[in-house]
Length: 120
Image (cartoon, rainbow, N blue to C red; front, side, top):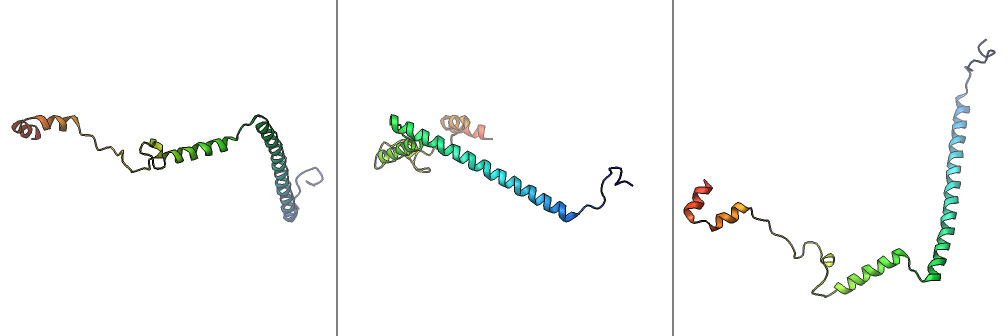
């Protein structure tokens, strides 16, 4: 009686539901692949246009400029006594000693009996 009035069907097939879910997942995966392909194609076209502009005006890519600057810095600091701080490896020189507190500094200049009095 419930089926005739538009109620829910009690005879749902779990295999059919499983197949529908697999088809839905496949469709989503395919749409995602198509979207990625579309954006990859658009980005390739943009990069072609960018390269044309770079060639026309003699502009270098940002990565190339950074690589050249890094190489120049390394080459300039090679064997140099006055190299930049960035070129100095960590742990070499320039290590700061622990700072003394003001009280320790004052204690050094006090006479012996006064030092003993403050230490207590």
